[in-house]
Amino acid sequence: MAVGIFRNLVCLLIFSLSSSGFFAQLRWDENTTPTYPELINYLKKLDKEHLEIELYAMGQSDYGEPIYVLLMNGAGDSTLTFAKARSKTTLLVNNAIHPGEPDGVNACLIWIDNWIKKGKNIPDMPVVAIIPAYNVGGMFNRSSTSRANQNGPEEYGFRGNARNLDLNRDFIKADAENTKTFTRIFHALDPDVFVDNHVSNGADYQYTLTYIASVKERMAPSLRKLTYGQLIPYMTKVLRKNSWDLFPYVELKGKTPEEGIIAFNDLPRYAMGYANLFNTISFTVETHMLKPFPERVKATHDFLDELICWMSGHAKSIESERMKAREWTKTKTFFQYNYELLERQDSILFKGFEAEYIENSYTGLTHLNYNRSKPFSRNIPVYSHYAAADSIKVPDFYVLEAQEKMAKSMLQLNQIDFIEVPGDTSVDLYHFMVKQFKSLQRPYEGHFKHSEIEIAPPFKQLTKLKKGDWIIPAKQEKAMYIHAVLWPEAEDSFTSWNFFDSYLQQKEYFSSYVFKDKISEIFSSNPQLKIDFDQKRMNDSSFASSEWDQLYFIYCNSQYFEPTFMRLPISFGYY
Image (cartoon, rainbow, N blue to C red; front, side):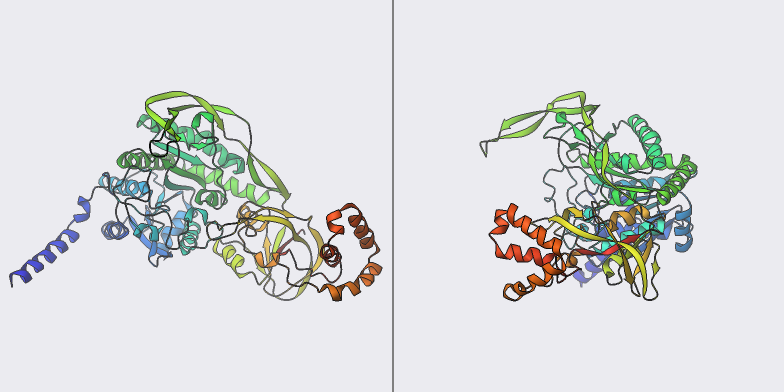
C-alpha cells in the first residue's frame, strides 16, 4: 500500500512540474543542451502560451520524427504566416545540422525567452523562423565523446544523421528526407537572410565568434554591396561593443594561421551555398570549439540578436536589393562556374597564439601546438578573392528528358518553372556529350562523386521530344539553381552527383572474329576514318601492337557504335 501511494505521489509531482513551469527552470546558459524531446516539448509549450509563436511540423526526417519550424511575428495562421514571410522581411535560422555543435539550439532558446520577457516588442521586427534542430537522428544519437576537441556541453548529438549522412553536404543531391523537408521550408518562407549555426574545428586562436559569408564574386552585385558594404561592417562594429571580435572563419591555407587564411568556398552542396543560389543573404556562424560552451552560446545569441536588430532597421533596403538581385539573375547573359581561389594576397590583423612544434611523449614525434601563454596580435595574409574558371552563354531553355524522375523531382521541389511537352515534336537542340571525367575511389556522402567533367563542344541536332519531356526556361528568378544543377561541368551539378551515371556506361560491344569482316565496309563508307586509323598506327606503337585497341578505334568511329554512350539526358536551345 505504501509503495503504491509513493508511486502515485511521484507521478503527481512529475505531472505538476511539467504543467506548471518546470521548463522555465531549465537553464540554457549553462553547460548542457536539451535532448530533442525536451526541446520540442518546450517549444510546444511556448506555442500554446503565446499567440505570437507558431510551431509547425513541416515534414519527415530520416529518423522518422518530424522536423519543425518555429515562427515569431507571424500572422497567427499557417497560410497567412507563410504568406507574410514571403512578402515581408524574414530571417531563417538553422540549428543542429551537426548536433554535436548545439550552440545555436541554446542561443535561440535564450533569445526567445528574452523576447518574451521584454514583452515581445521589437519595432519593425522581421519574421523570425527557426528550425530548432534540423538533424533529428543526430540529436537522438547523444554522447559526450564524439567531439574530442570541443569544450562542452556535457552531452550532445552526433554529426551524421540517421543514415550517417552529413546533411551539410546534401543540399543538391538531397539523399536525406531532412533535406527535402528543408527545401520545402526554405521555399515556403523565401527568407531574405539565412544563418546556419556551427562550431569550428581546426586552429586555436583568441576569437570566440567567426563567420562565413558567401563568396562575393558569386553573389548578385546588389547583395554583395549590401552584405560586404553595410551588414558585415555593422555587425563587426556593434558586436565589438558587446566584447566580441567578429572575425572571418579561419580556413587555413597552410598548417598555421601565420601562413595565411582563405575565404571558404560556399559551394551549393552546403546550406549557405544553396541559399545563395536563391539570392538569400547567407551566413555560417562558427564559434570556436575550445571556448567554453556558455561563452559560445552567448556569442551566437548576440550575433543573432544584432542581426535581427539590423534587419528591423533595414527592411526596405533588404527587399529592394533582393528585388534587384532577382532581376539580375533573370537577365544574366553568362553563367560563371568553377570558382577558384586567386593568389591575390591581402593582410588582416589576427589575434592568435604562437604555434610551436613539441615532442609527443607517447609517439616520440613532434606535433603542432598552440601556446596559449604566448598570445599575439599581428597581420597575417588573407586570400579572399575568387574568379570563375569557366563560363557559358546562358541558353534560353534547357530540356530534361521525361525518364529522369529524380532530377525532375528535385526541380519541382525547388519550385522551378517548366513546360511539359504534351506530345511528340521536333526541336533544334544542343546536346551534351561527356568526353572524360574522374571519379572518387571511395564513397563521399553516399556517392562516388565525379569531378573534372569535360564536355565535348555541344552539337546542334534536330531532336524529337516525347510526351513528358520538360522544357525549362533558363531566364527565371531561380536561374542560378537551374544552371548549377543542369550544366554538367558545374561544381555540384546533377551529373557530378551521379544522377546520370547510367549514360556513362557502354551497353554494347563486338566480337573480334565477327567484327573484322566489317572493316572493309566501314572504311569504304568513311575514307577519312581509314586515313586517321593508319596515321594512329604509325604514330602510336602501343596502339599498333594491340589488336583490340585497333578494332575498338574503328568500332567507336563507325555507324555500329551506340550514339547514346556518354550522351546526357539534358540539352539546351535558343529561340
